[in-house]
Image (cartoon, rainbow, N blue to C red; front, side, top):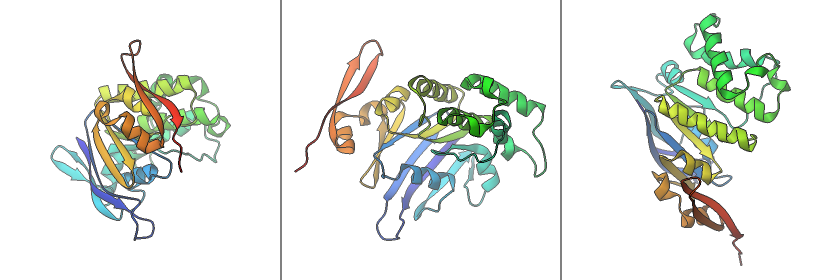
Length: 264
């Protein structure tokens, strides 16, 4: 199984592209992290990939067992195969956390079919793994932003997709929960689930490893994380001095900021 994005372009005014000719592939168990500054179009790119927005040009499809599915001609199958964690999730209704998360089973249910015992058992297992089982009977809109974030990720996992697309999955989370989400992403990868995510944190992309893309000036540069995340690339992206330092205790390089670059 793999997710293929081929020469995708998007423009709000049909004149100047926000980004152009974006191509990437995420295969079974793969992790692909996208870095980019504010306004680069990372969220828009993810929404085009999952079919929530229409790209200007290009194609997106999922290949599985010799068949191809896209979000427009094979919407039901595509929805079953791909889960989505948006950057911001509005929850105006007072569903309990458990009922909110079990909604992730919707692509597998009939029009008037209700979740069964097994659906709720799966939901409880995921809530335990996410560390929010004790909140299962709380109204979802009574939780903190970080707790709601964890519930939204749990709902995507409960869907049991082959691919999960996450838009800044650690947004609003404290440091400990950020690391728990990173470890959950690694566990998903180990189970054979492909993960495509955006992040503002270079160290998260370094920790996850595998493939990274840097979205900058309308283009996506892709490669192995350890090769593409360099001081020069991050300096150009964030317009600040950046140092890559090897930390023996972590067993990897980490990114630390230097001074902001001065402009004329």
